[in-house]
Length: 127
Image (tube, rainbow, N blue to C red; front, side):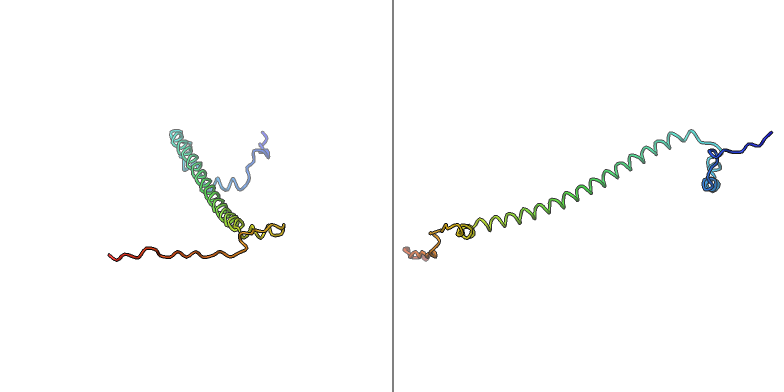
């Protein structure tokens, strides 16, 4: 009878053989796979998958919240800057400067304002 030579497909890599010898799962499991523990092991694996899913979801939500906060702060500063610019450009003196090139003159603002003084017509009462 001829010796059976393992084909290259059934031959295991050396690192797998060494790992199998070091772990030696047969002695840990008593030589066979404990089938009665499989439902509990599958339940724990399912819980682990759910835990991983929720932790990834929470991290994604935190990253999204941080991104939205940064964007909100950026837009808030943009709004404040634009508002200040519009307030500055909307003053009558700024508008008068812009239209002066076109020959339009604001005749009302050629003279400085006059101060109105009201005489005190009622004497102060002392109680």
